[in-house]
Length: 166
Length: 75
Picture (cartoon, chains in turn orange, yellow):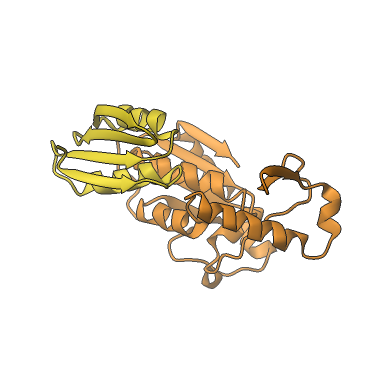
């Protein structure tokens, strides 16, 4: 890949650390939008964020430690107390509810946004250390991401106007 | 009349912008694109999109629940 495809473009970099269905949205929404606005975007996937690069996405919502989570239900907003997460299947139910809402409200799926990011030539870096830690190989991942580490990210960040940690 | 019409009614952020960008990419410079959307956030978003990309926002109107944006591809 050539180093500078758009030499005059502004740049944005992101560290993507979370791998739940809800937290997968901010990085992909911002990456695709920034790319559409002409920015050169780099995403660095580390720890649980690395799961967002897997060929088959199987993302779930976690009801634990999500105190502001209120799901619209029967005209009300239902709170999801942490205690609910001890009920077997609670996360699966919350995930199904969220996926239903996503479809009904015309919100893109993560698969769709990820594909849009790839088509927009967003650069993706998979954290080598996390790959090793969680025993993933590049065969588990989609085509496109390159392996790198903290130094690779820092080099990108020093050249970027916007750097986000998500 | 715009050269091309893009209907993104019912789609939510960031899809109207992504679809508009995709459509503009395949249009010649000077051509106009009309985007029809129902996402109220699109009003501010298309202003920001056009300012940042240098494309020209010729028109931003609303008719009931449908927002209409006319963009001239300049960038």
